[in-house]
Image (cartoon, rainbow over all chains, first blue to last red; front, side, top):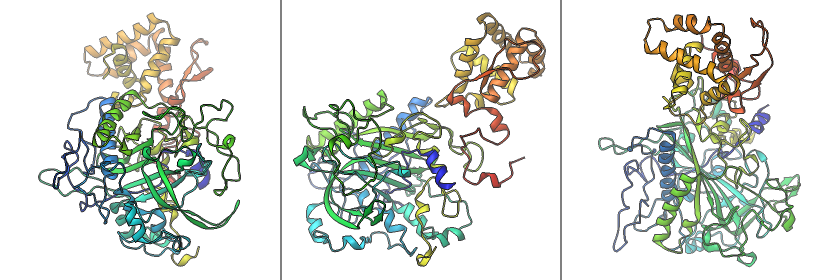
Length: 471
Length: 152
């Protein structure tokens, strides 16, 4: 029943159940992003960032322009999405907080704030034990002996040293995607920011026994816009889901168009198909990026989704003849938006005719395209070689009736747009069929704990195991 | 409210006919305003002169701000032999998301063949809201809602 319900709602975008982000509680990023973003503090000769680029993570959308129409409010939420994207991908210090002496993309690529957040596998442990404190990481056993796994080496690359990509399939097991360049499977990860992590840990929601004992209605903390009289407000719970592809220049990938990391690609042992446990250090490029953020104005959360611009059609500046990530325009007979044939074996390198042929079903609307051009222009102005100019917002989903009760009629708050999908994360559930096609809020409205209680729009809590490892 | 006078009058009349408020029927911020679809359905299935007569009659009633607008709508529209069946079909459309064939023998004693207005409308029938239930295959309620009695 439970599985059937999830499949029905198959939705998406958000299917993350989770994810993560960041720095909360006002400890890392507390500046008021509801006002026009203030320039990041500068050290030395660092120039001010162009446009509205800022390391300040917004706590909520800014409605100071008094929007009165659906399109105007959509614009404000889309700006919120871009502010969040830039702040989350701002250069990070060793502790994961934003390095305000630097500007995003000034060096082309950079380590990011969000990649220091807790990954879901670090929170919901197999034995249901208490996760390590914020800031401490643990690798799967199979990754601990892998060459290059010393913090020293990875710190030298200025990449995230503890990246582990352990998720193979998209939400609801609708199928993996296989990139056109090299026939490799895309990988996924889910991260939680500190506000989300603290809520789970403080309420012992990381194991089944803790969820059973928690009798209150689950409500993650909301982001609240700072005011002059109350400047230290919470960021609110954030969940991030990212999709990555193997970067292989020998097969035509252009690394300068992706945020890349040296990541441990971890594959769990499986009987079907027979798969052995493994962990490899691989260069991966970011191709999809979801942000879910619970805010005061959106108790149903705000759902932002970004993609690398070359996923399914050529992005600006893509050299003629260069391959797209997940679409081959030369193949007229390849089935579109169909999962690869089973068995889904991550060790396979699929031949060209079996690779993903993905099309976007709902186009990005013109207003969002215009906003993308503006923010991409600011990112390019930092550095013509900035990788961040090659990302685009698909859209932002938000509740049009946010006052609707989460326990009464209309708990979803009539989301806008009604449907939203990322081609790398909700590939096979794009469309406009109610309760079937990808819609973040509608799907996550069905999320529960392990004891079937509403879990406040995150499926992550279903990952909790029994304390001690029993059933 | 809309700048389209037909839509404004249609929503105002619908509020009287259904018992819901105009904001409930046509929220100021709505991604999929079903009221627009219902008005278009009405215009596509009923002669323009009759639609205009209904909307104009309601506009005149509303302009007078009568103390009991329900009674005025009953007397001037629902009791009218031409407008009454259409008004009752509007009620059915709002509650059931279906436009029923008007070309049946009068008086109507049952439901004739009908057409679901749209995929969007199917999920928004007021009957489901009034009964605190949901249409088949579509629920926005939280998992386990069936274990809790509806609010009175």
